[in-house]
Length: 219
Length: 219
Image (cartoon, rainbow over the protein chains, first blue to last red):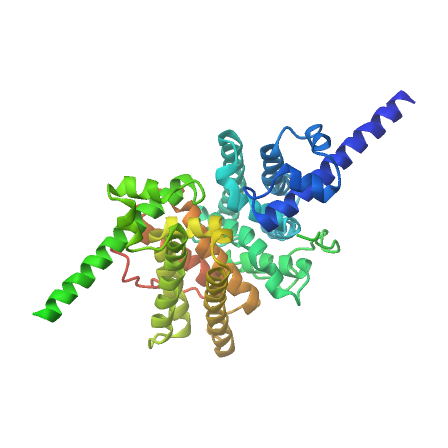
């Protein structure tokens, strides 16, 4: 009984934190970080500022959480796919499709991170840079393995991995311009472009993106 | 004689404006736009603030010029190449190689634009967005032409053009991590990756980048 009660309490805390972060994200996205205040966030949520202080130390802590969210999710998806039994080519195709979808789902987080990196504490900015590098380096290794086995044709694994990184992050900025296509369809087409870049052309669909059915969250 | 004198005068004005923009760019890049003042710029140049005011109305006008520079150069290069007698595939290869080099040369401009878009006047931000769209749409047309003639294999011209855009802009953020490669070599490898994405593999070098010999300006 006690355990159930403490579980419920943890869920309530998580829910409240999520609501606060969502409000902060919308404000930072619309007005910019520097122009948004904790008062604005409290007003939007119709709560008091002390309520926010009981979950977040300050505005900067909210920015940290927002900047961190997307890269954390991308690395988790990449790890999961890398440890699967798929072939090298299938791993790459699926990483690109899933991470495109994550970046579209996290569109506002990605744009806030690109804009506000200078407003992050040095150690947070550094950690995220290292995570971005880690993402690229794992893809480099995958490209190298694929090139060695002959499954992929890679121009230069270092540059190709960075090109993939650019394709992925940039979709946060343009996916809405292709409003006729669903995020899942865009993610699939991005994956096909990347697979074409590494010389992998098959007639069968490149990746069955099991996140495909999920709709994107509003920015 | 009068004409020579007025020509000299125009050159001096251009030189002074360039020095002011360079100082502003360094400051905006290092400290961020909001934290930089015209006093900082004057101090760095060892001039007075009225000196700056005789060339620029305010700090925002400097930001506009910086944000505008890179996309202007990219569109000019693209126009020139599109109106050349090269084949469709060669045009695309050269656009990607030259524009990569321009983005590397304009690294700080690109990063300042990505960070500070919200600090641009609405009509300036809108103009630059339209120019970015124009760049992508011209590439879409090129991809469509190439696909129709059978020279290129294009997954989806709309998505492929946006992927190319992402590859190009993102190189501003990573090219220094590949310090062993010159900007010209990086530009060439990026071009080869894009040409591979559109199914164009030849043994001969894809593009003789005639900007190749030029070194990159410091950020």
